[in-house]
Amino acid sequence: MLAKIEQLLQEVKGLTAQNPEELEALRIKYLSKKGAINALMADFRNVPAEQKKEVGMKLNELKNLAQERIAALKETFENQDNSAAELDLTRTAYPIKLGTRHPLTIVRNEIIDIFGRMGFTIADGPEVEDDWHVFSSMNFPADHPARDMQDTFFIETHPDIILRTHTSSVQSRVMEVSQPPIRVICPGRVYRNEAISYRAHCFFHQVEGLYVDKNVSFTDLKQVLLQFAQEMFGPDTKIRLRPSYFPFTEPSAEMDISCDICGGEGCPFCKYTGWVEILGCGMVDPAVLEANGIDSKVYTGYAFGMGVERITNLKYKVKDLRMFSENDTRFLEEFESAN
Ligand SMILES: [Zn+2]
View 1 (tube, protein in one colour):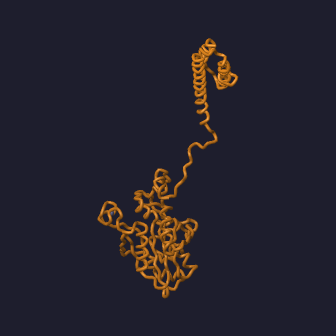
View 2 (cartoon, protein in one colour):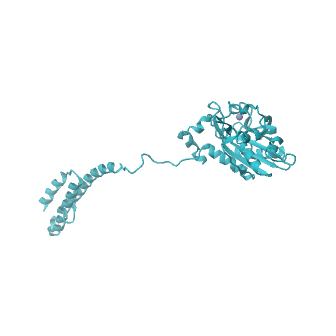
C-alpha cells in the first residue's frame, strides 16, 4: 500500500492540464468519490494496526498534495476565464454618471423660491417678441439706443420681430391681460448683440419682478430687495441704492450689496469699495402703466431686474461668463453639492 501511495505522490507532483476539461478528468481520477485516493482511503481499514500511523500520514500527504495541485491548476484557468468574462459586450463603454443641475438653474430656482415665499408668482412669455412688448410698451423712445442694431437681434425679413433684450416684455404681457394687484417675477433668457468675452455674452438670463397695486411705494421695493439680498447672500448683507436711469422706471436705482468676501472692508473682489452691484430697480413709470392699460392715477408699482449670471458670479465667484455655456463637465461638476 505504501508503494502505491508513493507512486501516486510522484504522479500528482507532475500533474499538468492543457485546459479545464483535462483538469476535470484529473480531478475525477484522483479526488472524486470513486477516485484513486478514495479507493486507498477505503483500503485503509485493512492496513495492519502497527502501520496505520505511517500509512495514514502518507495518505494525508497525498490527499493534500492532490487537492493543492488541482486547485492551483484550476486557478490558472479561472484567471484566464476572468479576463474573458470582463469583456462584457453588453456593457456601456464607461459608467454613466448622474447629471447635475446647471449652476444658473440652481441660482434661478433659488431666486424663484425666495420671491415665491414673498407672494410672487411666475410669469412666462416668448423669447421671439415684437417691438411693442420689448420696447414701445416699456417707454423706450423711438430713437433710444437700445433699439439700435448694435444691441438687438432683428429678424431681417420682419423688422418688427426681435429676440427679446430683456424679460420686461413679459411684464407688458401680464399687465395687458390683467388688472392689479399684480405681483409676478419673470425668469427667462434674453439676447443681445454683443461681442462674446469673459464679461459679456450674446445671451444671458434675467429675473424681473413687478408689483402693481394701490399705494405701492419705494419703501416697499426697498424692503423686498433687502429681504431678497439677505436670503440670497446671508442675514448680515446690507444694501444701498444709487440713483440711475431706465426708460421704464421713475425714479430708478441701481442696487449694491455689501461685499460678502470682505464684509464691506474693501478687497480686490469689490475693487476696494466694499460694495458690489447686483440689480436695477425703480418705480414703474406712469407712462408704462398707461401703455399697458393700467390707470396710473389709481395704481402705482415697482419693478426690478437682475441677471442670473451676475447673481451666480457673486455667489460662486465664477470669473468667466463663457463658462456657463461651454458645458465643460469639470466646471459643472463643481456644483454637484449645490443641487
Ligand atoms: Zn470686498
